[in-house]
Length: 222
Image (cartoon, rainbow, N blue to C red; front, side):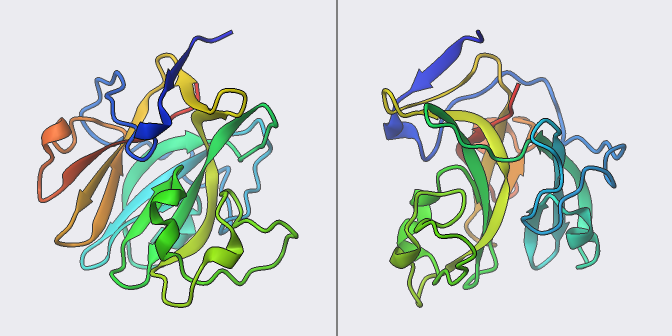
């Protein structure tokens, strides 16, 4: 069994820490660009098949993170590479891989992918999709009834599962030893979140180009 590293829920939002990485830039491999693709939030891959999260950028709009390559290409974004690969989200009653969900801020145009959506729980726009009987927004533990008409963040769907796990038996978060981190930065001037698989793309914890370091957003599954 792989060794797990557990950390306190106190640090859940930022997941501060540096995973081992020698990369110097976001990977730009294209060999899987047109395969294992999902349409919107409906993942077409099997549970055991991974698929990419693509990173795009458009001046004046910011970054887009999507599992549907056509979404970025058809909307005027410039392709920047594959952020990471993920698997479809699957629940387990004992230990659950935290789900990566995507959000859009209708007030400033920012897009966010997160495994801790409670960080924006007080500012979520009314969720009206009733395709399931669950009282929660898919992939979260946020009640649909708690969303509000003046909320700024719009739910855009499930990206996949992370390599971070919530253990219900002891209320801790863990990830596999050696799992690579996906790093999160934010530019408060342009209201843009940047996620990267390279700790050195924006000068590590110092940040660069107007972006401040927010910590490890989630870990890859390994």
